[in-house]
Image: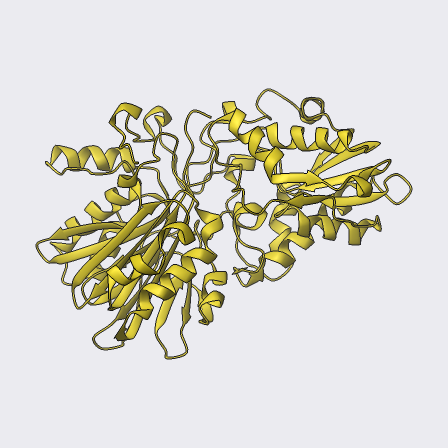
Length: 486
């Protein structure tokens, strides 16, 4: 792909006391959310209205170490962010949170998702004379909130007013001099949950696994269109709600791939939903049995749970077929195909004794470009597998996503211009089958989730109108304008 969308993780804490622990909590939570963004990270600490910030390119443990945390000092409120970026966007200016100062004080914002009307809003603000320091949607949100703040009595009222202008998918955390505010878009496309530390201090995060890692008690997920407010001065907590049209359209890809398996989303364990997806996938076809296949294996990590579910349903023995190098990041967002293939070779190695002379059923979360699974299938054949039957724990990707997932053009999808048999020929499997759209909805729905889910990348049914001119969707600077970091 020529351009890659971002997918991020956000966190915020409002401490009952002034303490250095706020930055430690934030760093630990961001480390737990590292799977959501591996390119840059940042933290802003608020000590009675004085904001201090640390932002870096790189992974959390490699950049936000103790000496740098100490520079942030003590504080009451802290927000943080980990980021995947667009191609050409790998420079420090785009790291978050975004920090701004205006007539009514300082403001810091961190954002997960993508706006579908960011181009129009950005042009409007530029014509008003506003200067943009970044190319991300978060600064557009920041200007929308600060503009609304001049007309509102409170910062939370300003966030609600800004939500009437911004469109698309977003979960945001906002920090003012005395408040922590968290908000989800009216369709709830991106996740955001609420919890409390043992002392009662509220915390918000993209996923519940971040709360577990800091010893916080998971309370609930924010509702679509909800604006949660925690006041550090009064210890008061309350919520306001968007009064426009709302829906229930959490991105189904959170369950398929993005979220950590130990997280709870929409009151459902991600691990259990993936197990169930594997079970449903086998039930939808019932073609492979113990008589026609020898083992079921999954591609680490998001294919493992589904493979176990498929094995349990089919009766075909489950085994571990790959060893994963945990020090290589996700290949999904690498913009250069040659680099992706190199990453795959470094990331996964086949256990030859497991697959040699076996008829293998291989499960993975998805097929996007097709390069990854093509290489993995070849690695299995090179290791001696007699047959490789590929099963996919999501439907066929057919459409672009404008809400934050890494698919901004259907032209780059392996399904573009190919039917399933042609895709199978391209990736080199003996057979290929996908989970249905109904099946991906059932994977969490069967376990108690009432969410309708956004499946636009599978069926083209977009819950929020998409840009008319997608060629102007991104705002990346030319490479010549990027910062060069030593």
